[in-house]
Image (cartoon, rainbow, N blue to C red):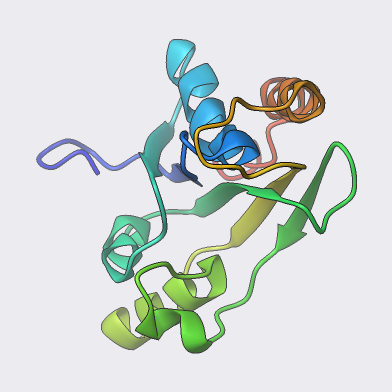
Length: 155
């Protein structure tokens, strides 16, 4: 988060491990967006979601989480999220729904509208490169975010 700077109405929070093959899709999306940052959008990336990320949702009108997934349609899926406490809050890595639940607990109000963009992944081997199929899905997801930003009505 930009400490001391104005908070953009939209937050795109990407996550994944660049050393685990297609798990790098989230951080690769961050890299693409960072080269030509969308207006009124803050970008944030991390290896995994943590309880502290709930504070990054403050003063937002829209939040987009971006991650890799093997259980989604090709090339990507966009789904609305609801705050939901799950077992992930007790681990080092949290689900986006659990981050929203922590936000509710901390600030005692509904979190901003939040969505998960899951980019179809195939291989998560440690030390492996991103697969070409996942790279193609990343390109299509990036094109979607540039041409039809889902946050456009909120920015």
